[in-house]
Image (cartoon, rainbow, N blue to C red):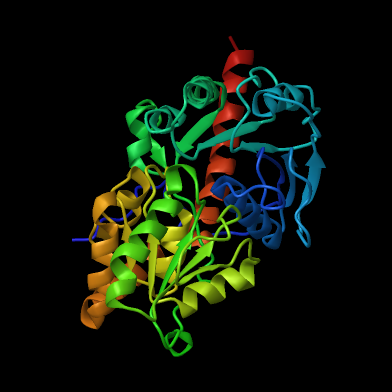
Length: 373
């Protein structure tokens, strides 16, 4: 039986209510960062504006071209900017907003909040610190993990994006997953490439393991499928990545959706994902997914029921066999498309809207109780 992501349940019969002024905090945005958090913040803010709310995103990154939401730029120079950003946000006057929804860097904001302060933990820096290379980066991740602990206490209400993240924050009970626009990412079998294509969205270096995927593609896939290509949506792939490897670089929303529709298989063999938006985008686009059994992939795939999870060393052989087996690809694609419905952006924003308003009611009751003592 396929499990349903445990979320804060939205109201079934939704009644139109007064628009909210929302400040959304995110160091990252797609205008200058490849971090998935920034893309999710962009999508959430856009959908909230479409529903009539006023949203300003407070970020170190510049505005996203064509964005419908407001933007407050916190410009920083020099080192340790992710830590200094939190201090800069602390100094901002946020009294004109009804809601602060932070996706990071709000750990200095005690006694400096609006009626509602919601925090989303998009993963665990402690978990990432276990896998990251280099003492300096590992230390940085541990410090960021401590900031996440503090942020979860400072906020009125904290949620995580996957159950696995609760291992590090067991006092956080609600899971609100990330969401994908199912109108943009959708199956289109007639647009599939006439030759085998494996699609990767991530980075060449680091925990996404783009370089390792390319090596196994050349070593295992190309000998069995000489016409196969590996398409890499990535900004750091070297020019000599290997035969059959096509570098798409940085793409816009429409180009990314088209790449999903044209590919045969999606593969992201990451060491760690707190959630893994590309997995859902691929599933929603009708692609079978091959992934390593990281925290995010296990959750999104319903413990491998909607994707093929395999150890990193076996990714190449798994891709080779899957490209040969059309029936297996169809079964995985069908299971993935069903699972993707659980992560619709519309459903996620429904949940957050209810959480914003419920947190306000809870805060009001607490304030009233304090005044009558």
